[in-house]
Image 1 (cartoon, rainbow, N blue to C red):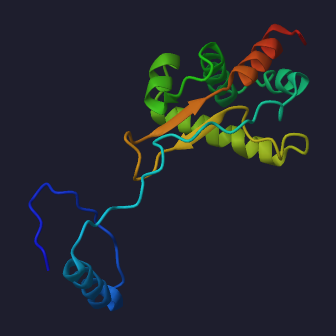
Image 2: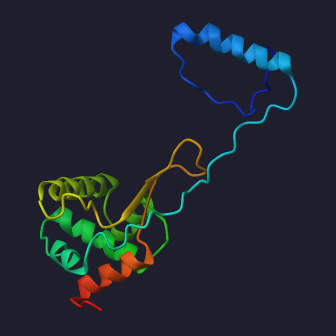
Image 3: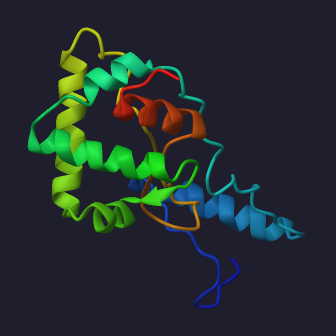
Length: 165
């Protein structure tokens, strides 16, 4: 088996103990075959945002914006921030700094709003009116990112302004 230098591209994979011998044999076979071993192509670090605009109507957004709890207030600040910067992916840490809330409070507010929406017959299928992406192990940057598309931002701003166009 070929040995690797410290710092070489290595990936740690959890393997059930019963399969360790098989994995070692597979690696030894690959080393015996030699040649250019190329890893599979990596997916893009950030996928194209899904088109979620239109799932919420302006009227529904306006109704959602009337909430009065602390959690609701935090979520409204986040939505206002995302709407002011459409199509820009903001990390959870950036959002917390911009709206001046702790990471714990931010996560709690989103979780609370999600639970509230799931319990509400009108909003059950809609989810929060924002987009979220949690990075995977192949991404360049770790973390959770949030954004609104330009259309989502326009609808949110209309709802907050009390207009329909």
